[in-house]
Image (cartoon, rainbow, N blue to C red; front, side, top):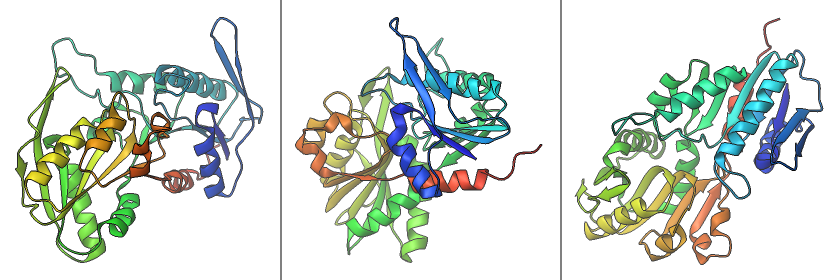
Length: 318
């Protein structure tokens, strides 16, 4: 097995390698004066079961599009040089949210990204919390492996929530199924019933409406708000306000991916969210120097990816 991590995600790749008891395979990346780029393996991939780690969030130095192209070119190079099987390990999958048409003439960007991975010669793709599991599975004709951060969050929730009544909430209607599955997992783990709620937020053409009405009983409870990602933090902030108005005692928030774009730091500081737990699929570099970072806890996703790679890494057919 060979495990590569492109430079933009080298830190997480190194932790995954440590979890696997191996080291990263050597490769070279070069930029050219006109902005083009070249990456090549320095370990021979011929006949090998190969894994390539690259998270596709924007920043701090490259856009998500640049990271995607570099990953695809590297995968194609591995295929050209005889890799037996190539698995893309993508902690944050760009365009996963655009999985259906919501307006006339909309693109279905997730499907196009899936086709690009297929065209480059990818055999399997592993990602964390792809927004809509069914859409992710249906978009990819190659093997699609979706990792759920729920078990990581369960341990943190148990430590942070403490005693007393607990409810699990979705900040919008679209996340109800995600929250239901997590609540069932927590109830099985903690051997006690938990409440469930959701907030009536809706989004259309980038405009958010609603977000004030809570369905479910949260009075006197510590509420665990679960979402797939944090962008501007507006959704979670509205949810926290609505939950407080409905009588919630405390609000803790959990999201796989922390993008923290725009005025997210200010929104987090002004919100009623006591603690925000994210994973390292996207390092919280946009919060650097902000006191908002003190409210954020970052969990390592390396154990999830290492376990998925270990399950996948049976011998390639020859």
